[in-house]
Length: 112
Ligand SMILES: [Zn+2]
Image (cartoon, rainbow, N blue to C red; front, side, top):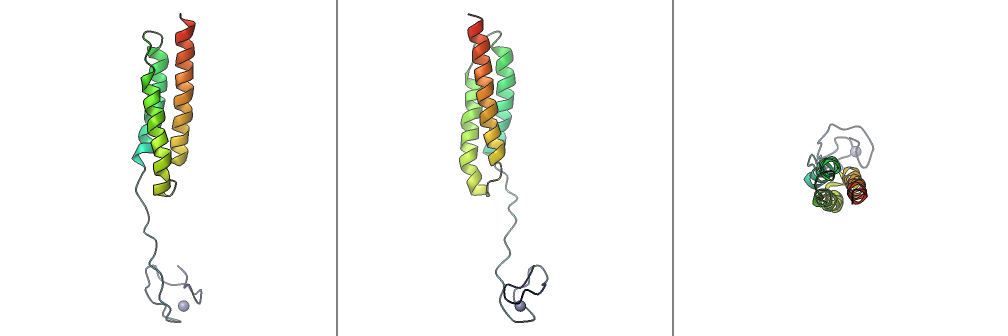
């Protein structure tokens, strides 16, 4: 870290600069928190898409990718609380969920 005033190199976690005496702001705690909704939404979307493509050949179930999409949508909102962590994952989950829903719908409707 650098002193906010004199820009000299300081040890990590130094409270007061030994050169100029300037008090340093507390170092940002590293956020290790993961965004569970983004991950859950992403997994649910992938799993839902694959399962739905298979299931749509047998039985029409459209709920699974929709669960993934809504979980991913929650993940996008929550991602801002985690400094954007998982946002891309959640967006990918929405895209995959939508593709899965469209494909399964297309397969199902083509069988009518
Ligand atoms: Zn200093």
